[in-house]
Image (tube, rainbow, N blue to C red; front, side):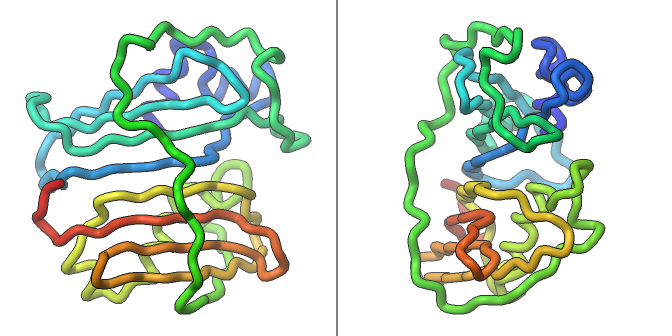
Length: 220
């Protein structure tokens, strides 16, 4: 997200420009990450990012993580965003902006972001209440914190034995401080596939996620 904001400065749609010129901000709606292997603690990782050249209601951005010599791809990601009015929290149309995206049509995309399957019957559910350290500058739960909540659902031994090969998360509704969040969870240990759904218990869904583990040290 930091490198994405840095890249957005060139197109006059970084966080500060959006705030000051349009009273707007980018809000993530979906992120899918694929990790092919994991670097060591002292390895240098090169991160590349670029936006789709088509500005629609949904803005798409791509990421690629490579070794220092760029000979190996460590992982890739595709994300989707909307522009939201910071006061009304309503989605804004591209016609309300003078943002021009660069021509990136010749850059191969990492993978297509398909509809995905997020339906499941949970094995267990737990409840969480967001605290101060969970919040971002808008006063809502930081999108990275959702991932930490998901990882907290697993026994430590499973996390010691496995690493995340894929994570696909849909952000459907912002979580505010003090809102009760019920996390539904299903984990197929044999297939190493998991599903998580965060909701308020009254019909409002905050996010849905699915992912795949692989044994530590394996490469995909």
